[in-house]
Picture (cartoon, rainbow, N blue to C red):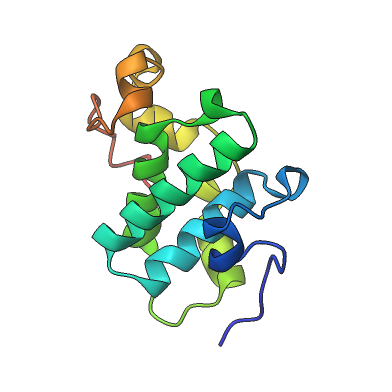
Amino acid sequence: MNAIAYPEVTIEKFEASDIDPDHFDHEAHVYIGWLYVREYELPEALAKFDAGLKRLVIKLSAEGKYHATITWFFLFLISERCEADEPWHDFKRRNADIVGGSRDVLSRYYSDAYLFSDRARERFLLPDKIPNPDLAA
């Protein structure tokens, strides 16, 4: 199995909200999402990751950082791009657009006004843009 890329970020610690926010940057978010989609079928991965993230932001008094559409969209992308038995470092290398923290991947699918609306923060919204296939990863 894969070596743990982030020993301080595990499903167990995430679900217990035992994550140091100083070690939970965008890449660590993607990493834990990757762990979930490898461990569970997508509907269960989405439910568990979303619930864990909501608990964590409440514990950290950072509820304003939770964004349903971004959370779900990234889990969908991770699931779509995840290869069976692929180590994290290979996934990370192949998916720099979602691991690197750039908003480019989001802007291919969502307009800023739509993505950063209160509605999109509260619940998952389907993309309002059709991506240019020439730009897709």
